[in-house]
Image 1 (cartoon, rainbow, N blue to C red):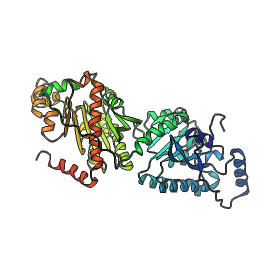
Image 2 (cartoon, rainbow, N blue to C red):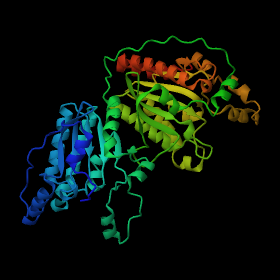
Image 3 (cartoon, rainbow, N blue to C red):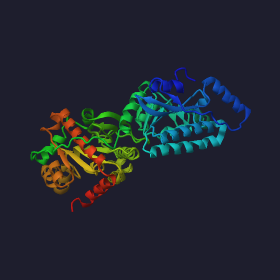
Length: 497
């Protein structure tokens, strides 16, 4: 055991409120086994001071009751056999029945080899228990420690709604020692490291255990915020808007100093918890996925990040796969979903075609329009093409005054019809792309004024948008879900007829 590795009880002492931890563990049930394994178990008990490789129970994080699962590496490398699995499942089921969020801290070499295939199969029932917990709409947070490998990573270690990892932690499916023994060569360095996994969208953050409670508290402030009985935010009357030419709005929307989703969240939201990537090995800087609250209203936010979309790296299909992760979170956790649209257009490239851009747009559209959760779309800036449309269909659609929506940028429409870009201002006017026209067509429900330009008043503008969003979310949360979903489908069925 590393001299710097915390024990399970030490970790819980740091992560939980002082004196709040209560053990749930019953004595492990042992099946008859061979004397050599019994001697190993006795040695593990002596070294660790524990009776198994996992500790379970409950405690409090910033006063909030949570259930916890933690591995002990000094007990046979934190490996999971029948007794440890039974303890884990009992704890998960108890957390589910008592309606508690669940925090897991695995550190493990994986399946306990001394128990063979029976131990290997235990991962099925652990995964099933976690799935039932999530199906009940309860949060599951995971803190991957050094090392987490094998069947533990391939089951309950990879199922978190939010997954963070210890700095420098070895996290991988096949441990490097096993790889070397099987294949006669070393595993490539730097791959199975927490920071590399974050760079590839497999974990949401890398942070020391001392920061775990703060992150868990922020996440649970969103994930456990009330959805019913939420005080209704004040209704904000619609604004009188000046008749600004469409091309003026398009020019304003392209200002480099125009506030994007990051500044919007900084000024308008609280308890913001950034997530990272698809959770399946992809990360696109063109999309920001966060948990957040606007006033008292909790939500998942999918925001197209103008700062992350560049000429040499436009928004690709991975961004929409990341967006669909956000939709899944909203569905599983019964949270409202907010999409923020601000894109000059999805990637047009060999990589985007081979990555299935068209299919990802189709799947995002389908999932979003049928999502059984309240949805609000915010058209914040540029709204070009299928990349914008993929995040549009919602119960309520808001637009900044100088935001716009078009199948192509006006220059592209001009090139198709006139074989030049000189007619772009004319095309913008004819196509009805500006917010005022979108409102008249029923595509947008409300336009939020800029005074006169969001880039000139970023903080005030973002706060106004946040107040409107809070008002819209609280009203959607008070609506009957079936009626709300039916109205959303009807809206897009009749649009343009």
